[in-house]
Image (cartoon, rainbow, N blue to C red; front, side):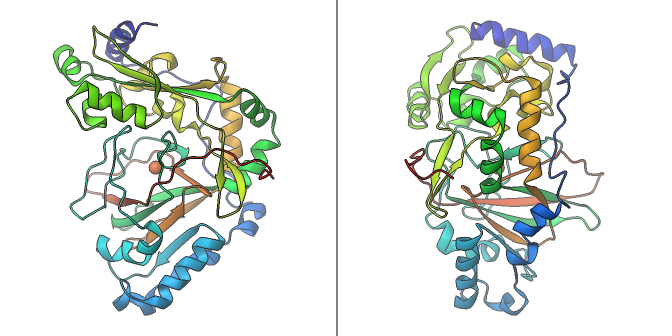
Length: 372
Ligand SMILES: [Fe+2]
């Protein structure tokens, strides 16, 4: 479909204001979290460090630094508990040697707002949205190696949570499934679209994810295109009528993980149109007209049943982390995916997470002989 037509349709559909229901697909997060299999592989105490005795030296304690390194190396997920602070600088300090060089937001996805402290951003999403399990910036050819989340504010009594999915276990489970074999065999293509700010303002379009100006942080189409290509976008097109930018990525379904010396799945439903099912305005539009869509590499669609199977497999290896203010978590972007179901807060209730993206790496895809 021509993009101008798609945008017109988006606008019309938004006016209809009826979210499209995806039959037979229900977002699930860790519905087997109490399952012994999950608990056995990853026990909370194995990746949680009680920081009570490090509270006064969070930013310089060598023992804490070593413990963080050890847990990160073995498991890939580190929770710092009882830090005694909500200062973002101190909460990220024990992870600095793993996060390494600052990885500023470079564009291509939802814009993240800096929260006023160097390197720390907001999550870029609203509470109401369901965020399916994903690798951070999984669509990019230069994603971060690790990501740090910190709980800066949480109203007492509010269950503010983030879910983590064990990607090593997910890889083994999905490889053993029919849908996994189909994904491996056919590969995937991700089609992304970015609206034009001027067109959006002039025509009052509301059901779009983001504009290329905001996403790529420029008003210059050439610079935006260049930045899109740097992120492996192919088949780049501009719609003359609407100014919409679009591109396609054909990602490797696997990525070699140096920590475990294995090829792990690098695939999530975050690139699928399902991402927008709880997104105001955009959830009124058909899949093929959403800001990004994921198909099999041959251009065929994933069925609702296949989408549901993938969500089930990741949910089986997911678990819930309920936040306490002042907790800080470091997650390996290879070995864990993160996400959460949508949540609603009552008036006056607050949940604020800060995010720090670690050093970037160049994707290499799978390495021969390193499969399970
Ligand atoms: Fe994320």
